[in-house]
Image (cartoon, rainbow, N blue to C red; front, side):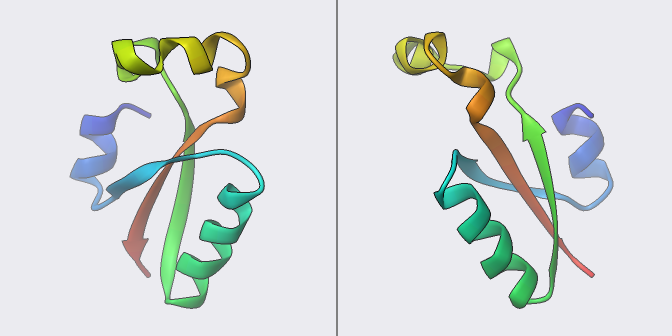
Length: 69
């Protein structure tokens, strides 16, 4: 899903992470009563400063979106 569609459905983008932090944040948000949606990063979401990191494992990073249940 595109960011515009997610926002329109009530999702809020929190930040981008990878394991092991990714699973920890998912558990935390769920324990606080949020639904969690993880989205693989798209090329246009990767800023120039981050490109080097994404060259060697960008598929490991996910954007975390939440919304109240």
